[in-house]
Length: 309
Image 1 (spheres, rainbow, N blue to C red):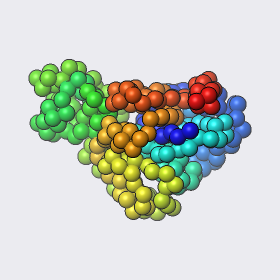
Image 2: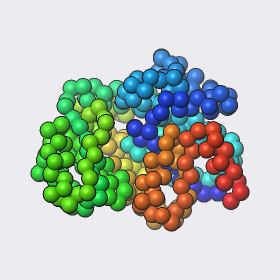
Image 3: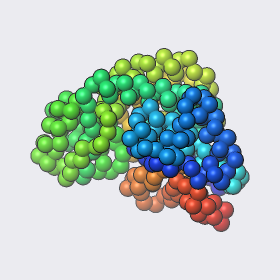
Image 4: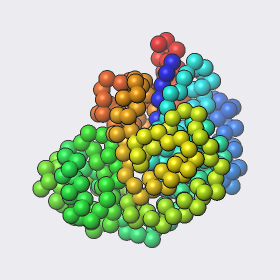
């Protein structure tokens, strides 16, 4: 059973995430206990009980999503021992989870990195006045032209007809106001704390580079497709470079998925609290199958589908 693993990005977090897994599986409880001990505070209490305002903080939701994705994987592997992971990928923060799943670094190393990344990005948000807007139903060339005119950056190329811009609050407001003039159907300002994947994250990028330089990183056991270049990265040097560049660079998700499909992959398994990635993959190529695992019930359904195939 060959499959590509996909891991959620920031925004997928939900209060209660992982609670049913922790109650049902001792291995998950152990992983979450390790996360709490490593971080020095109860991440799991925030995941299970909220409040959502606390869980949504960048320094909280990034380690929460990382721990949640790897917890699901732990149980999935035990229930479907024939699962052969052919590659991994993750949206933004999810790229770190994808690396941990592929053996690039151990659980504790990755957890420390995503906690630092989230903290650095949160600090950058507080020190800048940034915003993000999703452009729906427009041509990429027109959206890039708009970004240039408004002096903002292209943050995410998620799927056909869905591109996100990021930058100063003024620039994003300007881009949203001019979107229809560029033939873009809708411009939706996103409820985020700042301008992720834009030049306003430069301070976070510089600090993360230092943390990555000190982290124990090795070549992954399976290909990990990076967001920044939409291709697999294999050496510790290029892994550090692309994870660093990703903080201010564009998330090339559509290209990443197309690359994976071009390699002959037809089954994708999304591990995270929602099914956002499945929706994106469906818009990119309807011919491939995506199974989303977000809780114990969806895990059981996935196991049944995978073992029956």
